[in-house]
Amino acid sequence: MDFTKLEQSIGYTFKNKELLKKALTHTSYAYDNHIESNEKLEFLGDSILEFLSSKYIYSKYPNLKEGEMTKVRAEVVCEDSLYLVAQKHHFSDFLYLGKSEEVSHGKNKPAILADSVEAVIAAMYFDSGLEETEKFIISNLKEQIEESSKNVGMKDHKTVLQEKLQENGNVNIKYEVVNTIRTRP
Image 1 (cartoon, rainbow, N blue to C red):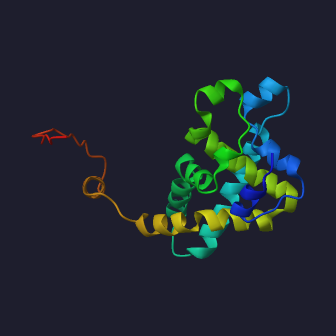
Image 2: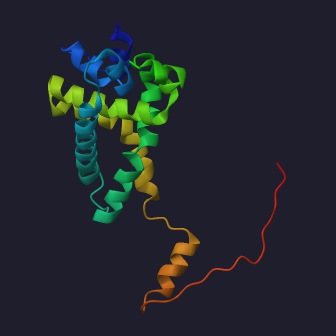
Image 3: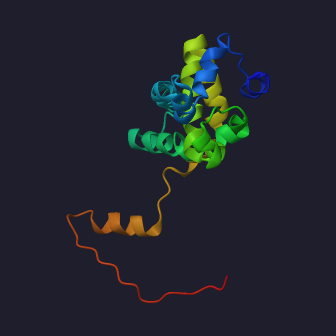
């Protein structure tokens, strides 16, 4: 498979194309073809992603508290965000899926696409190190991190009330539905 369009999209050209192919090889394809899947790369990519996004949040947002940084990272380093990255770069066009996943539209499954992003991150790390990998991660998640950091301190009214009531000790709070409003579809 020619990965030129994918490499142009992600802004990185692999020296070792086999690393990229492995990163895009789902377990179903690996099983059908008796080769190694992207699972181990995905495992490492997850850690690299957490580390580099944490480093970025730490240095870019010095006023955030530790718990707030954790919330920002959790909101950004998740299946939904990685799925969007995969869609942006058309990872689905380059996935190696087994027959079972092809039939069940695996190329559109958020979990498979998100996992492939983590695997590509690890492949990128092995191919060139942290610097290029960090460029890819930050260029793809910077806007989401920015948005999340703006909203991290905001709390809903129910949470604010609960925290206020519990300031002086343990309070037993009970909720009762008084009325509901039905809307027409």
